[in-house]
Image (cartoon, rainbow, N blue to C red; front, side, top):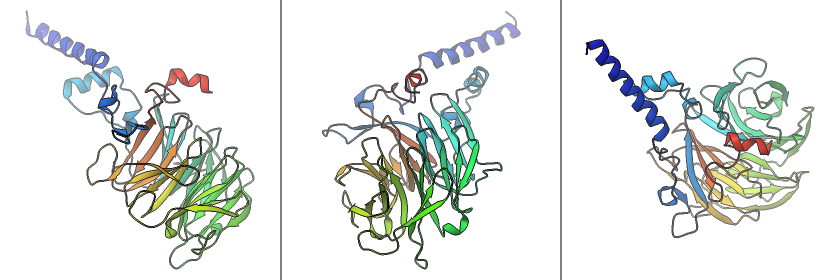
Length: 370
């Protein structure tokens, strides 16, 4: 046997091992198969409600290897590479397509889990972004992005084609959060104001024409007034939940801006807030509130009763560990998408009632939902 033949046999053997590993290796720890191996919330002995499922850090987490890439990595030992998050902030999701606003990259990075593809939005005019902050989607998957530098809302279709702007720069002093009604008819942009500014308010727009319709609330600490508001979420009937961060509470307003109720207070106990940030609703209108100081998100029922807290503050990266959490979104399956700026990631959690291969993140099953 000559040297060339020997080398060929070794290469073929390594290739067989590489491709065999691709088909027979167990799933990574981020997608465990038995409940005892899963990171669950709340932990035993309480009844489990959510399971840590995966983390999105770069395009490599959704785009599969090509055969030659997998072989090269098997032979060289190099890691899988992709286009990574820089400083993620907001997140929105539509049927397994995850939109992540990145303030360092000045774009929206799109992770399509079922289609296994990745692309970016907002890098070119028209629709070029400077500092994407608050984000939301309507029922058709159109994406709405509040730009903190340009002080306007940018609207794109699901595939990233720019559609229109909403609002004018003079409408907002310090843009922060964004909420959109399911049909896209109403868009709400949060103006956080500041210690030296009294523009603590929510601007309401016609989502189709871009016309400014009204201004909701003003600075204060009484019911119906806000201090350093951060984000807003819209219910099915058009009511608003507003993160009133300077007053350490969440307030609910009617569609025409009238105060309805509030919950929360300053403190370090469950159900209290220290640095509340962004907010999301699930299909049952349970309320998810990010707290940057706690390093978690808390889940409340529509009456403001605490149901569960997920995550912890930590200086070590890992599932459910957070240093600077910001955005949160919940899809129609009940999966939760939670952003941490410091660790440059989006952690995904799914309800225990939802199988790993169920819902919009599964390409084969997604067709029945379209």
